[in-house]
Every structure is written in C-alpha cells, then in structure tokens.
View (tube, one colour):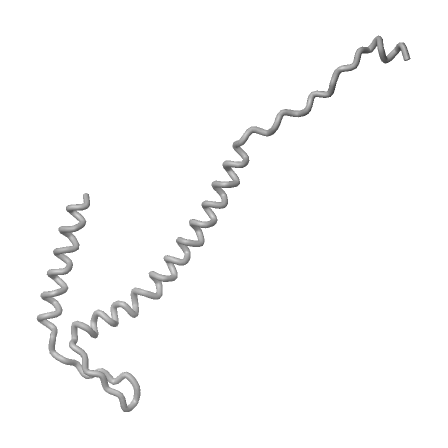
Length: 102
C-alpha cells in the first residue's frame, strides 16, 4: 500500500512539474491600486488554488479535532459506566433471640 501511495505522489509531482514548465510565462496581476505583481502563470494558479482550498480545509481540521475530543470524553464516560458498581454493604444480621431478651 505504501508503494502504491508513493507511485501516486510521484505521478502527481511529474504532472505538476510539466504543468509549471508549460505555463511559465509571466502574468501581471494588479494586487492593489498602484501595485502590479508579475508572477509565472503556474505560481498564480497554485496560489489561487491554495486560497480556495486552505480555509475550508482548516475549518474541517478544527471540526475533526473538536469532534475527536468529544468522542474521547464519551468513550471515557462509557468506560466508567461499564465498570461494575461496588457491592452493597451487608449489614450484620442480628440474632432475634438476643434482641427479644433485652
């Protein structure tokens, strides 16, 4: 399974490299009035992709962490509920004859 994952990552890296080389012409991007940045098209596409991908990814990561904590707390509660309750105390039995003699 690890070898398959490595092969997939190598294929993705090769495709991204070919894409970056094919789209290396500079593009002028007006960031603020009076400021123009010239970036290679491939870098600009990757930056735009990351700007759209990272916020939901980080939000989802936070939710997964929060829900994982809730699950951990609930599992601890379940474990506590599964432990047997202590046996009720046995009161010493009294001898009815001794009680009536008094």
